[in-house]
Amino acid sequence: MVLTKKWVIERLPVRPKDANKGTFGKVLVFAGSENYPGAAYLACAAAYRVGAGLVTLATDPSVKTIVSRKLPEVTFSSKKEIYAKLSDYDVLLIGPGLGQDEQTKSLVEKLIKEKLQHALIDGDGLNILSEINNWWSDLKGQVVLTPHPGEMARLTGISIDDIQRERVNITRNFAKKWNQVVVLKGAHTVVAAPTAEVAISPFANPLLATAGTGDVLSGVIAGLIAQGLNLFKAACVGVYIHGQAGEILREKIGNAGAFASDLLPLLPIIIKQLKLRGTVLVSISKHRVS
Image (cartoon, rainbow, N blue to C red; front, side, top):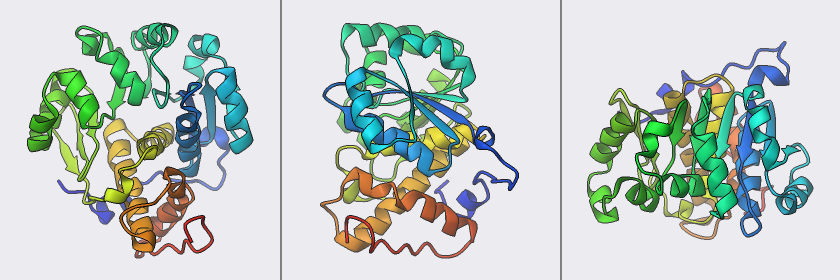
Protein backbone atom coordinates (compact mmCIF):
# COMPACT_ATOMS: atom_id res chain seq x y z
CA MET A 1 0.00 0.00 0.00
CA VAL A 2 1.23 3.47 -0.89
CA LEU A 3 0.06 5.98 1.70
CA THR A 4 -2.53 8.44 0.43
CA LYS A 5 -3.98 11.65 1.76
CA LYS A 6 -7.42 10.01 2.07
CA TRP A 7 -6.04 7.09 4.12
CA VAL A 8 -4.23 9.47 6.47
CA ILE A 9 -7.21 11.83 6.89
CA GLU A 10 -9.40 8.94 8.03
CA ARG A 11 -6.94 8.06 10.80
CA LEU A 12 -6.04 11.45 12.27
CA PRO A 13 -6.67 11.72 16.04
CA VAL A 14 -9.97 13.24 17.13
CA ARG A 15 -9.80 16.49 19.15
CA PRO A 16 -12.96 16.79 21.32
CA LYS A 17 -13.91 20.28 22.49
CA ASP A 18 -14.18 19.25 26.14
CA ALA A 19 -10.65 17.83 26.22
CA ASN A 20 -7.85 18.53 28.68
CA LYS A 21 -4.14 17.87 28.28
CA GLY A 22 -4.56 14.37 29.64
CA THR A 23 -6.96 13.60 26.81
CA PHE A 24 -4.17 13.94 24.29
CA GLY A 25 -1.66 11.79 26.04
CA LYS A 26 1.69 12.03 27.76
CA VAL A 27 5.05 11.39 26.12
CA LEU A 28 8.17 10.52 28.13
CA VAL A 29 11.31 11.21 26.09
CA PHE A 30 14.67 9.67 27.04
CA ALA A 31 17.01 11.60 24.77
CA GLY A 32 19.86 14.06 24.43
CA SER A 33 23.43 14.18 25.64
CA GLU A 34 26.19 16.74 25.99
CA ASN A 35 27.08 16.53 22.31
CA TYR A 36 23.53 16.15 20.98
CA PRO A 37 21.13 18.37 22.94
CA GLY A 38 19.34 19.45 19.77
CA ALA A 39 18.02 15.96 19.09
CA ALA A 40 16.10 16.01 22.37
CA TYR A 41 14.66 19.44 21.57
CA LEU A 42 13.51 18.39 18.09
CA ALA A 43 11.83 15.21 19.31
CA CYS A 44 10.01 16.95 22.17
CA ALA A 45 8.91 19.88 20.03
CA ALA A 46 7.60 17.57 17.30
CA ALA A 47 5.50 15.60 19.79
CA TYR A 48 3.88 18.83 20.94
CA ARG A 49 3.43 20.11 17.39
CA VAL A 50 1.29 17.10 16.42
CA GLY A 51 -0.91 17.49 19.49
CA ALA A 52 0.49 15.59 22.47
CA GLY A 53 -0.88 16.91 25.75
CA LEU A 54 2.31 16.70 27.83
CA VAL A 55 5.94 15.97 27.01
CA THR A 56 8.53 15.18 29.68
CA LEU A 57 12.24 14.91 28.91
CA ALA A 58 14.46 12.62 30.98
CA THR A 59 17.98 13.80 30.31
CA ASP A 60 21.27 15.19 31.62
CA PRO A 61 21.35 18.57 33.43
CA SER A 62 23.35 20.14 30.58
CA VAL A 63 20.66 19.19 28.08
CA LYS A 64 17.88 20.40 30.38
CA THR A 65 19.44 23.87 30.49
CA ILE A 66 19.53 24.15 26.70
CA VAL A 67 16.12 22.65 25.95
CA SER A 68 14.30 24.62 28.65
CA ARG A 69 15.43 27.85 27.01
CA LYS A 70 14.24 26.72 23.59
CA LEU A 71 11.05 24.96 24.66
CA PRO A 72 9.63 26.07 28.01
CA GLU A 73 6.57 23.85 27.57
CA VAL A 74 8.61 20.70 28.24
CA THR A 75 8.73 19.29 31.77
CA PHE A 76 11.84 17.50 32.98
CA SER A 77 12.96 14.44 34.87
CA SER A 78 16.34 13.02 35.74
CA LYS A 79 17.46 9.74 34.19
CA LYS A 80 17.35 8.13 37.63
CA GLU A 81 13.62 8.86 37.93
CA ILE A 82 12.63 7.33 34.61
CA TYR A 83 11.59 3.91 35.99
CA ALA A 84 9.28 5.41 38.59
CA LYS A 85 7.55 7.50 35.93
CA LEU A 86 6.96 4.88 33.22
CA SER A 87 3.42 4.01 34.28
CA ASP A 88 2.40 7.68 34.21
CA TYR A 89 2.98 8.02 30.46
CA ASP A 90 1.29 6.70 27.34
CA VAL A 91 4.47 6.26 25.31
CA LEU A 92 8.21 6.20 25.94
CA LEU A 93 10.52 7.58 23.24
CA ILE A 94 14.10 6.32 23.57
CA GLY A 95 17.15 7.35 21.65
CA PRO A 96 17.46 10.68 19.83
CA GLY A 97 20.94 12.05 20.53
CA LEU A 98 21.21 9.81 23.57
CA GLY A 99 24.86 8.86 23.26
CA GLN A 100 26.32 5.47 24.03
CA ASP A 101 28.27 5.80 27.27
CA GLU A 102 28.17 2.84 29.64
CA GLN A 103 25.59 4.35 32.00
CA THR A 104 23.25 5.10 29.10
CA LYS A 105 23.69 1.61 27.65
CA SER A 106 22.82 0.08 31.01
CA LEU A 107 19.68 2.22 31.31
CA VAL A 108 18.48 1.31 27.83
CA GLU A 109 19.11 -2.40 28.42
CA LYS A 110 17.02 -2.25 31.59
CA LEU A 111 14.25 -0.18 30.03
CA ILE A 112 13.62 -2.53 27.13
CA LYS A 113 13.07 -5.38 29.58
CA GLU A 114 10.34 -3.41 31.35
CA LYS A 115 6.76 -4.17 30.37
CA LEU A 116 6.31 -0.94 28.43
CA GLN A 117 2.81 -0.08 27.29
CA HIS A 118 4.07 1.59 24.13
CA ALA A 119 7.54 2.71 23.09
CA LEU A 120 9.48 4.07 20.14
CA ILE A 121 13.20 3.42 19.77
CA ASP A 122 15.33 5.59 17.50
CA GLY A 123 18.92 6.67 16.95
CA ASP A 124 21.33 5.65 19.67
CA GLY A 125 18.64 3.52 21.25
CA LEU A 126 18.80 1.34 18.14
CA ASN A 127 22.60 1.34 18.15
CA ILE A 128 22.56 0.09 21.73
CA LEU A 129 20.02 -2.61 20.83
CA SER A 130 22.25 -3.83 18.02
CA GLU A 131 24.96 -4.76 20.55
CA ILE A 132 22.60 -7.04 22.53
CA ASN A 133 22.31 -10.66 21.39
CA ASN A 134 18.73 -11.54 20.39
CA TRP A 135 17.63 -8.12 21.63
CA TRP A 136 14.13 -8.54 20.17
CA SER A 137 13.37 -11.29 22.66
CA ASP A 138 13.95 -8.78 25.48
CA LEU A 139 11.31 -6.32 24.25
CA LYS A 140 8.31 -6.72 26.55
CA GLY A 141 5.96 -4.10 25.14
CA GLN A 142 4.67 -2.83 21.81
CA VAL A 143 7.45 -0.92 20.12
CA VAL A 144 8.06 1.11 16.97
CA LEU A 145 11.63 0.86 15.66
CA THR A 146 12.71 3.71 13.34
CA PRO A 147 16.09 2.86 11.77
CA HIS A 148 17.79 4.53 8.83
CA PRO A 149 19.58 2.06 6.51
CA GLY A 150 22.81 2.15 8.53
CA GLU A 151 21.00 1.37 11.77
CA MET A 152 18.99 -1.33 10.03
CA ALA A 153 22.24 -2.90 8.85
CA ARG A 154 23.56 -2.99 12.41
CA LEU A 155 20.31 -4.48 13.72
CA THR A 156 20.06 -7.18 11.06
CA GLY A 157 23.63 -7.95 9.99
CA ILE A 158 22.62 -7.30 6.37
CA SER A 159 24.65 -4.85 4.28
CA ILE A 160 23.28 -1.40 3.53
CA ASP A 161 23.40 -2.13 -0.21
CA ASP A 162 21.31 -5.27 0.20
CA ILE A 163 18.85 -3.44 2.46
CA GLN A 164 18.41 -0.68 -0.10
CA ARG A 165 17.84 -3.20 -2.89
CA GLU A 166 15.10 -5.01 -0.94
CA ARG A 167 13.68 -2.32 1.32
CA VAL A 168 10.10 -3.58 1.39
CA ASN A 169 10.84 -7.29 1.76
CA ILE A 170 13.52 -6.81 4.42
CA THR A 171 11.39 -4.41 6.46
CA ARG A 172 8.40 -6.76 6.29
CA ASN A 173 10.44 -9.82 7.19
CA PHE A 174 12.11 -8.26 10.20
CA ALA A 175 8.91 -6.66 11.49
CA LYS A 176 7.52 -10.19 11.59
CA LYS A 177 10.68 -11.69 13.12
CA TRP A 178 10.95 -9.02 15.81
CA ASN A 179 7.16 -8.85 16.30
CA GLN A 180 7.27 -5.05 16.25
CA VAL A 181 6.44 -2.18 13.90
CA VAL A 182 9.47 -1.17 11.82
CA VAL A 183 9.92 2.14 9.99
CA LEU A 184 12.81 1.98 7.51
CA LYS A 185 13.58 5.62 6.81
CA GLY A 186 14.80 7.05 3.52
CA ALA A 187 13.37 7.81 0.10
CA HIS A 188 9.88 6.24 0.12
CA THR A 189 10.05 5.28 3.80
CA VAL A 190 8.67 1.78 4.45
CA VAL A 191 6.42 0.99 7.43
CA ALA A 192 5.79 -2.66 8.28
CA ALA A 193 3.69 -4.35 10.96
CA PRO A 194 4.27 -7.81 12.48
CA THR A 195 1.17 -8.95 10.59
CA ALA A 196 3.08 -8.35 7.29
CA GLU A 197 1.00 -5.26 6.51
CA VAL A 198 3.21 -2.73 4.69
CA ALA A 199 2.78 0.93 3.81
CA ILE A 200 5.11 2.99 1.64
CA SER A 201 5.54 6.75 1.77
CA PRO A 202 4.84 8.55 -1.52
CA PHE A 203 7.64 11.02 -0.73
CA ALA A 204 11.31 10.93 -1.77
CA ASN A 205 12.93 14.21 -0.82
CA PRO A 206 16.68 14.93 -0.67
CA LEU A 207 15.94 18.04 1.38
CA LEU A 208 15.20 15.77 4.35
CA ALA A 209 18.63 14.13 4.16
CA THR A 210 20.01 16.37 6.89
CA ALA A 211 20.74 16.09 10.60
CA GLY A 212 17.74 16.12 12.90
CA THR A 213 14.90 15.23 10.55
CA GLY A 214 14.76 11.72 12.00
CA ASP A 215 14.48 13.18 15.50
CA VAL A 216 11.48 15.18 14.31
CA LEU A 217 9.89 12.04 12.85
CA SER A 218 10.35 10.11 16.09
CA GLY A 219 8.62 12.88 18.03
CA VAL A 220 5.78 13.04 15.51
CA ILE A 221 5.08 9.31 15.76
CA ALA A 222 5.36 9.30 19.56
CA GLY A 223 2.95 12.23 19.77
CA LEU A 224 0.41 10.37 17.65
CA ILE A 225 0.74 7.21 19.74
CA ALA A 226 0.08 9.30 22.85
CA GLN A 227 -3.20 10.45 21.29
CA GLY A 228 -4.44 6.90 20.93
CA LEU A 229 -3.44 5.70 17.48
CA ASN A 230 -2.17 2.15 17.35
CA LEU A 231 1.51 1.83 16.56
CA PHE A 232 1.21 0.96 12.88
CA LYS A 233 -1.30 3.71 12.16
CA ALA A 234 0.73 6.25 14.15
CA ALA A 235 3.86 5.35 12.21
CA CYS A 236 2.06 5.64 8.86
CA VAL A 237 0.32 8.92 9.67
CA GLY A 238 3.53 10.33 11.13
CA VAL A 239 5.59 9.37 8.10
CA TYR A 240 3.05 11.02 5.80
CA ILE A 241 2.79 14.28 7.77
CA HIS A 242 6.58 14.49 8.11
CA GLY A 243 7.01 13.83 4.39
CA GLN A 244 4.38 16.41 3.47
CA ALA A 245 6.18 19.00 5.59
CA GLY A 246 9.34 18.23 3.66
CA GLU A 247 7.52 18.72 0.36
CA ILE A 248 6.28 22.14 1.43
CA LEU A 249 9.82 23.16 2.34
CA ARG A 250 11.21 21.87 -0.94
CA GLU A 251 8.70 23.92 -2.90
CA LYS A 252 10.01 26.99 -1.12
CA ILE A 253 13.79 26.51 -1.06
CA GLY A 254 14.68 23.57 -3.30
CA ASN A 255 16.56 20.36 -2.57
CA ALA A 256 19.05 21.62 0.02
CA GLY A 257 19.51 24.08 2.85
CA ALA A 258 16.68 23.32 5.29
CA PHE A 259 17.06 22.99 9.05
CA ALA A 260 15.22 20.10 10.66
CA SER A 261 13.57 22.67 12.92
CA ASP A 262 11.98 24.26 9.84
CA LEU A 263 9.62 21.28 9.77
CA LEU A 264 8.19 21.97 13.23
CA PRO A 265 5.83 24.92 12.57
CA LEU A 266 4.50 23.21 9.46
CA LEU A 267 3.25 20.09 11.27
CA PRO A 268 0.07 21.48 12.90
CA ILE A 269 -0.81 23.46 9.79
CA ILE A 270 -0.60 20.34 7.64
CA ILE A 271 -2.77 18.43 10.11
CA LYS A 272 -5.35 21.23 10.09
CA GLN A 273 -5.53 21.31 6.31
CA LEU A 274 -5.75 17.53 6.08
CA LYS A 275 -8.72 17.59 8.47
CA LEU A 276 -10.37 20.17 6.24
CA ARG A 277 -9.86 17.67 3.41
CA GLY A 278 -8.41 20.41 1.27
CA THR A 279 -5.20 20.63 -0.68
CA VAL A 280 -2.22 21.09 1.59
CA LEU A 281 -1.05 24.58 0.65
CA VAL A 282 0.95 26.04 3.50
CA SER A 283 2.25 29.59 3.47
CA ILE A 284 5.65 29.62 5.13
CA SER A 285 6.51 33.22 4.41
CA LYS A 286 6.70 33.97 8.15
CA HIS A 287 9.08 31.11 8.90
CA ARG A 288 12.85 31.22 8.99
CA VAL A 289 13.19 29.84 5.48
CA SER A 290 11.47 32.85 3.87
